[in-house]
Length: 349
Image (cartoon, rainbow, N blue to C red; front, side, top):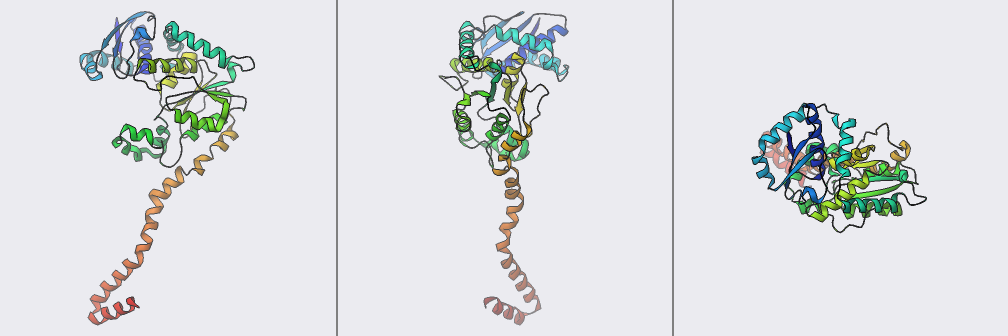
């Protein structure tokens, strides 16, 4: 029986589990054994989120990620070697989405009840059809991915910043990356509404000032992902995203991708220049360009160009006269003491 596992967060674990089913099928097997370590990235046990695992069983333990890596290094290496043999688009297969849907369908009754109640109230309430609700996932720090797309190695300095500093600062030095989410949202008709899944209330309030009642979220007791309550909040949000008409996701986020795949919904992961899938439900290029004007108004690229390329040259201009007179003095000294005195006198005048 194939053994798989991951010490990471919920969405990464779901990815590993479903990938394990594909690897097991390639070996002629149907069931898998899942290692589920309880650690700081996943404080919830498997059975606190799911009733059972279809076609397999789970081994739970409380381990530090480094201890897990050392104790199960062979399992991790075997999984990684098998995973490398899969085609890059294996997650788009029918088998992957089917098995992922089976896994999340086994959510504990409390989670399923809350998801169904919220969906009925906010997604399917009379004149509000579910097709008009678009899911938006914004991870607290993730919009920096947009900045990294634009600036590349400039943002290596972020590694030296502390977590509170990253939480407090703007996610981009020269523009607000939430403008990119706004541009994607404004490309939809004005009748569209947006379910916001985020662990940043600042991001939600920023969108609320621009879209008003068109944006909404669940009343959550916690925005963290380091407690059982916080993990459940995130799991409920993931299931709700999977029931939206489409998902505007955070760049390089497995959470956004797993939510879209679980509901077989189209997803656009926000970047500076996002790629729009063919099955995207609504996209007005002109509205997107109009909203994207903030790319220029907030000086994302041109201000970086000014700050790093042009500004240093302008700062040298006031120093030019002094450098010129120093050069003249040096030449005068070579010509003779008298000449140097004359030049000094002219300079004083």
